[in-house]
Amino acid sequence: MNMTNTLTSRLLFVLLISIFSLSQAQIDPITAQITSASVSANPPSGRASFVGNALLYGSTLYGPGLISLLELDSNKQKVGLEMLIASTSFLGAMHSTKKYQLDYTHTRLMMWGAYAGTAYGLGSLVFFNSADTKKWAIPSMLLTPIGLVFARQLTKGRFYSEGETDLLISSGLMGILYGAGSVYLIPPVEKLSEATKGRLYVSSVMMTVPLTVWQTNQLINQFNLHQINRGAAALYTMNGIIGALYGTGLCHILMNQKYPRFHSLSAMLGLPVGICSAYQLHKNNSYTIGRTTLLGLGAIAGAVFSNGLTFLFEFEDSRIFAAFGIIGSTIGFYLVHNATQPNSNKVVSGEKQVSNESDQIQNNTIPIQLSFRF
Image (cartoon, rainbow, N blue to C red; front, side, top):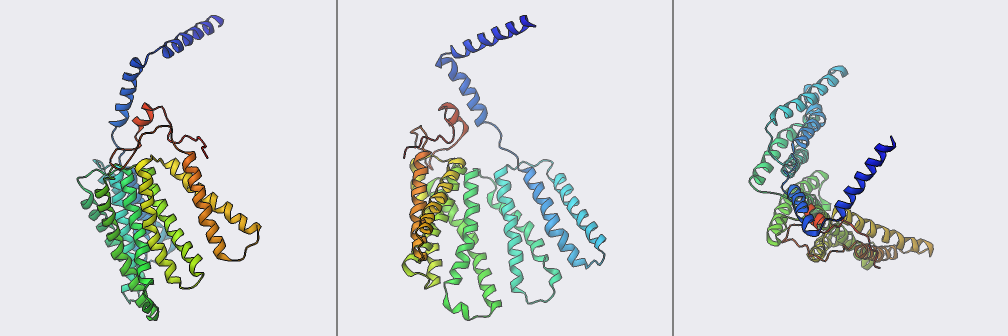
């Protein structure tokens, strides 16, 4: 037993010596092989996401929708039909995707096309005055596959990075804000009936969502952000939200609680300002999901800390809370941004491929390196 342990120890010692004695010229080919393997790896398939969404739709839309249409009285029959539709949706999706060749990013865009079709179907109900609520699912059941196929046709034949996909999805969600906000800014709308107002809001959102996605796609082409990584894409989204909040806060500081429509207008103006600030940061810095998350947490922590001071001093004016929140979150964002600067001075912009594993291997760095240079 002792002889075996001694032999093992000697082998480990020789192995360690041989590793640490390798020159840089001997290490570089090994690193290159690892890098090429990581870069040339096939992108993950989106089949699991597609099948999972099919199961979800069968359970939450097509199952309940058919049960409502058939007007079943027996609870057991309702449960049985729900279980059959859910399982059939899963099995059908599995069978139809045997030769599924789409990657995860294309699948995400297709699924969000399906989500948009579902939302459009539910929103279209405001245009019908029918009192028959049992047919609520018919528009969504028809528009969901149409939205999926439409998204598939729009994205066919081109590569989409995960960050670019995130930007397109986020822009669609932001379109909801602009669609609803643009109607809210029109004072005569308040004098209309609830049904008419509902139609106006839904119509506006239905028009602005595809417009914002289209405009975002144009900006991605203009600034060559096709290879943007998810961390930088999250920074654009986060700064847009922060810009909208800052706009609302500044409007509240200047006008207090008067003119609520100006608060909405300020949010709509502040959002693109925040996105522009993210672009300026992204031109000279690299971002990962972890670093962007820390930046968001730093902004929140700064706002909480500064507003904690207002409670300690027992301020009553809400404008002071807004001012301290803006100042504190800005300081928190700035401090965390400095604290998470990577050691590498490499500039990562929208014109270069960013945040791939090969950069981290070659530079022997991790995505986030805390240096705390306040």
